Image 1 (cartoon, one colour):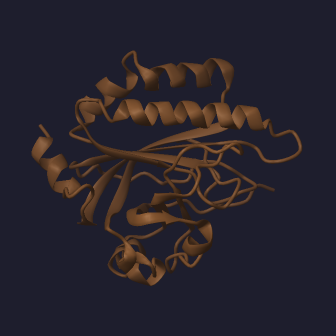
Image 2 (cartoon, one colour):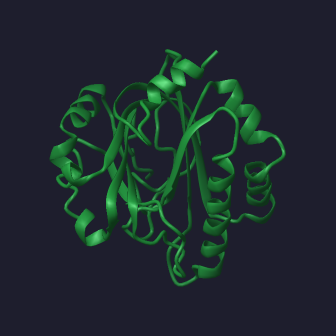
Length: 248
C-alpha cells in the first residue's frame, strides 16, 4: 500500500552570515520550527573529501510547511529556532510560495524521495526565488567519487551564477545531517531573465545536460517560489526590494 505523504504549501528560507566559521555542533541547537514538515540547515562552504560542504561562516536553512499560518509564525519567531541569530553579522529570511515544482527530494521523507511541494492555485506574481535540490541514494553502493564530482561542479555553477546578469543573489548549502539533499537558492530580477540565463549555453546548462545523459545524481528537483515577505538584509541589501526594483 502506498503511503500518503504530506507535501508543503509554503517554505521559509534563512541565510545567516557569522563573523567567523561555525561548526555543526554550534548549529545543532537550531530546532525545527513548530509545525514544520522539514527543517534542513547547513554551511555554504567549499566541498570536502566526503562531498559535504565544509564548515563556513555562512549557513543556510529551509523549512517546509503545509499552511501559511505556521510558516508566517515561524518567520516572525525565527530567533526561537535560530537561537544563535543575535551573534550573526547579518541575516536574511523569506516567506515563500511555490508556483512550479518538479522532480524528487528527500527532505520530507528520507526513505521515499518524491515531490515535496503542492503548487499554489494562483501565481500572485512578484519577486522570484528558485530552489533546486540534488541527492544520492545512501547505502553500501554509494559512490563517493560521484558525490564529490557533482558537488564540485555545483560549486562551479554557483561561481558562474555570481556573474549572471539578472541574478540578484544566490547561495548553495548541504544540510549538516548526512544524506539530506543539497540545496541551491537563487533570486532573480524576473522570470524571463531567469529562464534565459539558466537554460542558455553556460555552466548551468552544461550540468543539466550532464545530469540527463550521465545521471550525475540519483535525483533532483526544481521549484519556483514567490517571495511573499522578507526580513533582514544580505550583503547590506534588502533582496526583495532589489528584486522588485530590477523587475519588469
